[in-house]
Length: 234
Image (tube, rainbow, N blue to C red; front, side, top):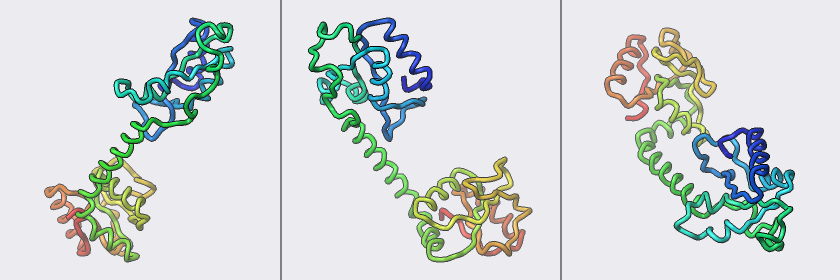
């Protein structure tokens, strides 16, 4: 259901309730882990209300039964409910189980949380590997009010801009790149090197870790008689 638009989801609920009196139902709840193609993640109450409109009760006996079962994928244990036509009350389930949450309505499975924490640790390790190469630059930017440009509009620049945001650092005044179709990244204008005016910037940081590319950029900068530049990732 998480792969369908809200309108399509409502339509599917109608089809399900017209097709069976007992429905095993599962749909992804909101979390920091969003699956591929998920466009309609909802808490259980959302679907419960849609089934209620079709005169179906809900039974929350799947989650507590399988919550700690390592043989069940956590998203199935977290997201699965039974819906039953209320004309059948008392036939399949004790009425004391109907329309009562056995676990909190908005609860994220502990294995989901563990997965999120693992992803965050991996991201931290990834940043730790990269940051030493630019720590001097970050410190320089943080401690000064230099107007600077980044030369290069590729993945390294996008990553560096994320670092600037994360640590609330001063953003570059402009980005210079002669081989991109982009005109802006993160609200920062991209210009061709022919338009570069050294009078409006104090320093250029070369945003590349490819030695051949860096060499070409250096030659281009020096041809413009600009001497104040550094390699961002050296």
